[in-house]
Image 1 (cartoon, rainbow, N blue to C red):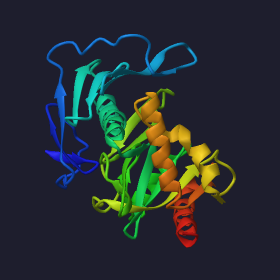
Image 2: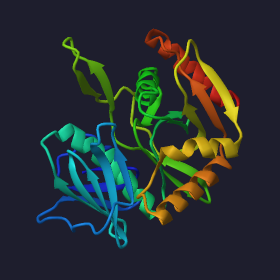
Image 3: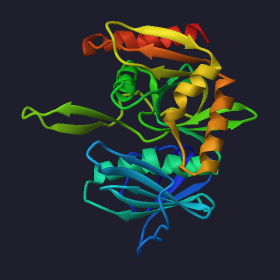
Length: 290
Protein backbone atom coordinates (compact mmCIF):
# COMPACT_ATOMS: atom_id res chain seq x y z
CA UNK A 1 0.00 0.00 0.00
CA UNK A 2 0.97 3.64 -0.35
CA UNK A 3 -0.67 7.03 -0.10
CA UNK A 4 -2.20 9.79 -2.22
CA UNK A 5 -2.96 13.31 -1.01
CA UNK A 6 -2.43 12.22 2.58
CA UNK A 7 -4.78 9.18 2.41
CA UNK A 8 -3.60 5.60 2.79
CA UNK A 9 -4.64 3.83 -0.41
CA UNK A 10 -6.16 0.35 -0.37
CA UNK A 11 -6.40 -0.71 -4.01
CA UNK A 12 -7.29 -3.73 -6.13
CA UNK A 13 -5.56 -2.17 -9.13
CA UNK A 14 -1.78 -2.15 -9.56
CA UNK A 15 -0.84 1.52 -9.12
CA UNK A 16 2.81 2.45 -9.66
CA UNK A 17 2.65 6.07 -8.62
CA UNK A 18 1.66 5.93 -4.96
CA UNK A 19 3.72 7.66 -2.28
CA UNK A 20 5.76 5.45 0.01
CA UNK A 21 4.93 7.59 3.07
CA UNK A 22 1.97 6.41 5.15
CA UNK A 23 -1.29 8.34 4.87
CA UNK A 24 -2.42 10.32 7.92
CA UNK A 25 -5.86 11.56 6.80
CA UNK A 26 -7.68 8.23 6.66
CA UNK A 27 -8.08 5.43 4.11
CA UNK A 28 -9.00 5.70 0.43
CA UNK A 29 -10.32 2.53 -1.23
CA UNK A 30 -9.98 1.93 -4.97
CA UNK A 31 -11.75 -1.19 -6.17
CA UNK A 32 -12.88 -2.76 -9.45
CA UNK A 33 -16.57 -2.95 -10.29
CA UNK A 34 -17.92 -6.52 -10.13
CA UNK A 35 -21.10 -5.49 -11.94
CA UNK A 36 -22.15 -2.55 -14.11
CA UNK A 37 -22.03 0.80 -12.32
CA UNK A 38 -25.34 2.61 -11.73
CA UNK A 39 -26.73 3.99 -14.98
CA UNK A 40 -26.96 7.79 -14.97
CA UNK A 41 -30.34 9.46 -15.37
CA UNK A 42 -30.69 12.51 -17.53
CA UNK A 43 -27.96 14.67 -19.00
CA UNK A 44 -24.50 15.02 -17.43
CA UNK A 45 -23.96 18.03 -15.15
CA UNK A 46 -20.61 18.68 -16.82
CA UNK A 47 -18.98 17.63 -20.09
CA UNK A 48 -15.86 18.22 -22.15
CA UNK A 49 -16.25 17.67 -25.91
CA UNK A 50 -13.46 18.00 -28.47
CA UNK A 51 -13.61 19.80 -31.78
CA UNK A 52 -14.41 16.53 -33.55
CA UNK A 53 -17.47 15.99 -31.36
CA UNK A 54 -15.78 13.30 -29.28
CA UNK A 55 -16.64 13.34 -25.59
CA UNK A 56 -13.56 13.31 -23.33
CA UNK A 57 -15.31 13.73 -19.98
CA UNK A 58 -18.76 13.66 -18.44
CA UNK A 59 -19.98 13.74 -14.84
CA UNK A 60 -23.37 12.74 -13.45
CA UNK A 61 -24.99 13.30 -10.06
CA UNK A 62 -26.08 10.12 -8.28
CA UNK A 63 -27.38 11.47 -5.00
CA UNK A 64 -24.36 12.06 -2.78
CA UNK A 65 -22.17 10.18 -5.25
CA UNK A 66 -20.78 11.10 -8.66
CA UNK A 67 -20.21 9.06 -11.81
CA UNK A 68 -17.34 10.14 -14.07
CA UNK A 69 -17.03 8.93 -17.65
CA UNK A 70 -13.46 9.30 -18.93
CA UNK A 71 -13.26 7.54 -22.31
CA UNK A 72 -11.46 5.37 -23.17
CA UNK A 73 -10.24 4.62 -19.64
CA UNK A 74 -13.61 3.68 -18.22
CA UNK A 75 -16.18 4.86 -15.68
CA UNK A 76 -15.48 5.91 -12.10
CA UNK A 77 -17.99 5.95 -9.26
CA UNK A 78 -17.02 8.40 -6.52
CA UNK A 79 -18.41 7.95 -3.01
CA UNK A 80 -17.12 10.71 -0.70
CA UNK A 81 -18.96 9.33 2.32
CA UNK A 82 -16.94 6.10 2.34
CA UNK A 83 -13.91 7.63 0.55
CA UNK A 84 -14.24 4.96 -2.13
CA UNK A 85 -13.54 4.97 -5.86
CA UNK A 86 -14.99 2.12 -7.91
CA UNK A 87 -13.54 1.64 -11.40
CA UNK A 88 -15.28 0.07 -14.38
CA UNK A 89 -12.25 -0.56 -16.59
CA UNK A 90 -12.29 0.52 -20.22
CA UNK A 91 -9.40 -0.09 -22.62
CA UNK A 92 -6.06 -1.65 -21.66
CA UNK A 93 -3.92 1.53 -21.52
CA UNK A 94 -2.95 1.06 -17.87
CA UNK A 95 -0.70 4.14 -17.71
CA UNK A 96 -3.44 6.49 -18.94
CA UNK A 97 -6.02 4.87 -16.67
CA UNK A 98 -3.75 5.27 -13.64
CA UNK A 99 -3.12 8.93 -14.52
CA UNK A 100 -6.84 9.58 -14.66
CA UNK A 101 -7.40 7.77 -11.38
CA UNK A 102 -4.71 9.59 -9.42
CA UNK A 103 -5.00 13.06 -11.01
CA UNK A 104 -8.68 13.35 -11.99
CA UNK A 105 -10.95 10.89 -10.20
CA UNK A 106 -9.29 10.99 -6.77
CA UNK A 107 -8.96 14.78 -6.86
CA UNK A 108 -12.67 15.06 -7.72
CA UNK A 109 -13.53 12.68 -4.88
CA UNK A 110 -11.53 14.76 -2.39
CA UNK A 111 -13.12 17.98 -3.69
CA UNK A 112 -16.50 16.43 -2.89
CA UNK A 113 -15.23 15.88 0.67
CA UNK A 114 -14.11 19.52 1.25
CA UNK A 115 -10.58 19.80 -0.20
CA UNK A 116 -9.66 22.44 -2.75
CA UNK A 117 -8.57 20.47 -5.83
CA UNK A 118 -6.73 22.17 -8.68
CA UNK A 119 -5.45 21.14 -12.09
CA UNK A 120 -1.91 22.13 -11.19
CA UNK A 121 1.62 21.03 -10.51
CA UNK A 122 3.13 21.72 -7.10
CA UNK A 123 6.75 22.15 -6.01
CA UNK A 124 8.09 22.60 -2.47
CA UNK A 125 10.52 25.43 -1.75
CA UNK A 126 12.12 25.46 1.72
CA UNK A 127 9.16 23.68 3.27
CA UNK A 128 6.43 25.64 1.45
CA UNK A 129 4.58 24.92 -1.77
CA UNK A 130 4.20 26.90 -4.98
CA UNK A 131 1.28 25.85 -7.20
CA UNK A 132 1.52 26.19 -11.00
CA UNK A 133 -1.82 26.31 -12.83
CA UNK A 134 -2.69 26.70 -16.50
CA UNK A 135 -4.18 24.93 -19.52
CA UNK A 136 -2.49 21.87 -21.00
CA UNK A 137 0.62 22.83 -22.94
CA UNK A 138 1.61 25.82 -20.78
CA UNK A 139 4.44 23.91 -19.11
CA UNK A 140 3.16 22.66 -15.73
CA UNK A 141 4.74 19.21 -16.03
CA UNK A 142 7.88 20.47 -17.82
CA UNK A 143 8.36 23.08 -15.12
CA UNK A 144 7.91 20.49 -12.35
CA UNK A 145 10.47 18.24 -14.07
CA UNK A 146 13.04 21.04 -14.38
CA UNK A 147 12.57 22.10 -10.75
CA UNK A 148 12.73 18.51 -9.52
CA UNK A 149 15.96 17.87 -11.43
CA UNK A 150 17.34 21.05 -9.81
CA UNK A 151 16.82 19.52 -6.36
CA UNK A 152 13.38 20.78 -5.37
CA UNK A 153 10.70 18.44 -4.02
CA UNK A 154 7.80 17.80 -6.40
CA UNK A 155 4.43 17.26 -4.72
CA UNK A 156 2.44 16.77 -7.91
CA UNK A 157 2.62 17.30 -11.66
CA UNK A 158 -1.02 17.39 -12.82
CA UNK A 159 -3.33 17.57 -9.82
CA UNK A 160 -3.11 18.87 -6.28
CA UNK A 161 -5.41 18.57 -3.27
CA UNK A 162 -5.33 21.25 -0.57
CA UNK A 163 -6.84 21.27 2.89
CA UNK A 164 -7.89 24.75 4.04
CA UNK A 165 -8.25 24.78 7.81
CA UNK A 166 -7.36 26.89 10.83
CA UNK A 167 -3.66 26.17 10.25
CA UNK A 168 -3.88 27.63 6.73
CA UNK A 169 -3.79 25.95 3.30
CA UNK A 170 -1.82 22.68 3.25
CA UNK A 171 -0.96 20.91 -0.04
CA UNK A 172 -0.66 17.12 0.09
CA UNK A 173 1.65 15.06 -2.15
CA UNK A 174 -0.05 13.49 -5.16
CA UNK A 175 1.12 10.85 -7.61
CA UNK A 176 4.85 10.21 -7.89
CA UNK A 177 6.68 10.85 -11.13
CA UNK A 178 6.11 13.22 -14.04
CA UNK A 179 4.55 12.37 -17.39
CA UNK A 180 6.56 13.91 -20.24
CA UNK A 181 5.15 14.18 -23.76
CA UNK A 182 7.48 13.89 -26.77
CA UNK A 183 7.50 13.05 -30.47
CA UNK A 184 8.78 9.79 -31.94
CA UNK A 185 10.89 9.96 -35.11
CA UNK A 186 7.80 9.09 -37.15
CA UNK A 187 5.99 12.13 -35.74
CA UNK A 188 3.64 10.24 -33.43
CA UNK A 189 3.16 11.48 -29.87
CA UNK A 190 4.11 9.42 -26.86
CA UNK A 191 4.05 9.96 -23.10
CA UNK A 192 6.79 8.65 -20.84
CA UNK A 193 6.90 8.60 -17.04
CA UNK A 194 9.98 10.05 -15.35
CA UNK A 195 9.84 8.13 -12.06
CA UNK A 196 11.11 10.72 -9.56
CA UNK A 197 13.30 13.65 -10.56
CA UNK A 198 13.24 15.10 -7.04
CA UNK A 199 15.70 13.99 -4.32
CA UNK A 200 12.97 12.66 -2.01
CA UNK A 201 9.25 12.53 -1.41
CA UNK A 202 8.03 15.76 0.19
CA UNK A 203 5.78 15.92 3.25
CA UNK A 204 2.56 17.98 3.24
CA UNK A 205 3.51 21.64 2.89
CA UNK A 206 1.85 25.01 3.54
CA UNK A 207 0.99 26.83 0.32
CA UNK A 208 3.23 29.85 -0.33
CA UNK A 209 1.86 31.16 -3.65
CA UNK A 210 -0.13 30.34 -6.78
CA UNK A 211 1.28 30.98 -10.27
CA UNK A 212 -0.91 31.06 -13.37
CA UNK A 213 1.12 30.12 -16.44
CA UNK A 214 0.34 32.20 -19.52
CA UNK A 215 1.43 31.68 -23.10
CA UNK A 216 5.15 31.24 -23.56
CA UNK A 217 7.25 34.12 -24.85
CA UNK A 218 10.81 35.20 -25.49
CA UNK A 219 11.79 35.24 -21.83
CA UNK A 220 10.51 34.85 -18.29
CA UNK A 221 7.95 37.37 -17.04
CA UNK A 222 6.32 37.52 -13.58
CA UNK A 223 3.34 39.74 -12.76
CA UNK A 224 1.55 39.95 -9.38
CA UNK A 225 -2.26 39.85 -9.59
CA UNK A 226 -4.96 41.21 -7.34
CA UNK A 227 -6.84 38.44 -5.54
CA UNK A 228 -10.10 39.15 -7.40
CA UNK A 229 -8.35 39.05 -10.78
CA UNK A 230 -6.53 35.86 -9.83
CA UNK A 231 -9.82 34.28 -8.73
CA UNK A 232 -11.41 34.95 -12.11
CA UNK A 233 -8.42 33.64 -14.08
CA UNK A 234 -7.86 30.54 -11.93
CA UNK A 235 -11.48 29.36 -11.77
CA UNK A 236 -11.12 27.19 -14.95
CA UNK A 237 -8.37 25.25 -13.12
CA UNK A 238 -10.74 24.05 -10.38
CA UNK A 239 -11.46 20.33 -10.12
CA UNK A 240 -15.01 19.53 -8.94
CA UNK A 241 -17.94 17.21 -9.58
CA UNK A 242 -19.62 19.62 -11.99
CA UNK A 243 -22.76 19.91 -9.86
CA UNK A 244 -23.92 23.41 -8.90
CA UNK A 245 -23.18 22.88 -5.22
CA UNK A 246 -19.74 21.44 -6.03
CA UNK A 247 -18.84 24.39 -8.24
CA UNK A 248 -19.94 26.89 -5.59
CA UNK A 249 -17.97 25.13 -2.86
CA UNK A 250 -14.82 24.90 -5.01
CA UNK A 251 -15.08 28.58 -5.96
CA UNK A 252 -15.43 29.55 -2.29
CA UNK A 253 -12.37 27.52 -1.29
CA UNK A 254 -10.31 29.08 -4.07
CA UNK A 255 -11.38 32.53 -2.88
CA UNK A 256 -10.25 31.64 0.65
CA UNK A 257 -6.89 30.46 -0.66
CA UNK A 258 -6.27 33.65 -2.62
CA UNK A 259 -7.07 35.81 0.40
CA UNK A 260 -4.34 33.89 2.24
CA UNK A 261 -1.52 33.62 -0.33
CA UNK A 262 -0.37 35.82 -3.25
CA UNK A 263 -1.13 34.97 -6.87
CA UNK A 264 1.05 35.69 -9.90
CA UNK A 265 0.85 35.37 -13.66
CA UNK A 266 4.03 34.18 -15.37
CA UNK A 267 5.23 33.37 -18.87
CA UNK A 268 7.98 30.83 -19.53
CA UNK A 269 10.42 31.10 -22.47
CA UNK A 270 9.68 29.22 -25.68
CA UNK A 271 13.30 28.04 -25.77
CA UNK A 272 13.35 24.79 -23.78
CA UNK A 273 17.10 25.17 -23.32
CA UNK A 274 16.43 28.30 -21.25
CA UNK A 275 13.79 26.60 -19.10
CA UNK A 276 15.96 25.28 -16.23
CA UNK A 277 17.41 28.73 -15.55
CA UNK A 278 14.01 30.42 -15.99
CA UNK A 279 12.37 27.89 -13.64
CA UNK A 280 14.83 28.73 -10.88
CA UNK A 281 14.39 32.45 -11.48
CA UNK A 282 10.61 32.01 -11.32
CA UNK A 283 10.81 30.35 -7.91
CA UNK A 284 13.19 33.03 -6.63
CA UNK A 285 10.96 35.79 -7.99
CA UNK A 286 7.84 34.38 -6.37
CA UNK A 287 9.60 33.78 -3.03
CA UNK A 288 11.06 37.31 -2.98
CA UNK A 289 7.60 38.86 -3.39
CA UNK A 290 5.86 36.66 -0.85
